[in-house]
Length: 104
Image (cartoon, rainbow, N blue to C red; front, top):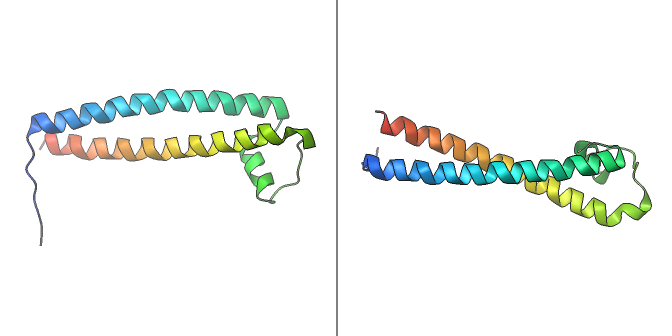
């Protein structure tokens, strides 16, 4: 069984606008988190990917013992960045689907 929803083009256009606003917000947040991640990478001389591997025990520990607070924040920012990237992708896909519907 197939269900077809008919939504006014003006309402779909409003949804697209809301999605675009959220995408702009995410882009700003991504730039901010990327800047913070790069600062930690420069400070400690390892990439965020390497940090996460060290925390999982997949790579030798190469950070100083007194970096605990930075490591906790760095890991949290890395997870936030990853979440934002996923949210951005989902919203872009949703926007494409809605845009496709408004042009048919």
